[in-house]
Image (cartoon, rainbow, N blue to C red):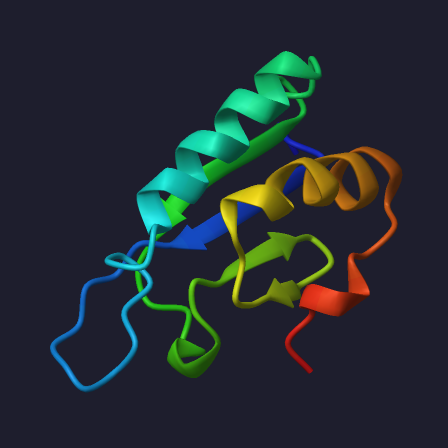
Length: 100
């Protein structure tokens, strides 16, 4: 496998009244993840990219980390450094953001 981990961030746009990850900073989260991974030198082993609907709209903006299959919800830009350092670099899930 080319990457040790792969992060998919929902950037889907849906009509109201559903919560919409794309309009709730989806691409901003993708870009912040990419920047943080590059800054930490992790961008060659961990890939972050946009995705379509992850089917957890009520918890958006959302993302999923593979191969673990851990879903994070209500992610803020300020959460990105913690997700990268804790989960992506050190394999410690950020429990407060996990969608059960």
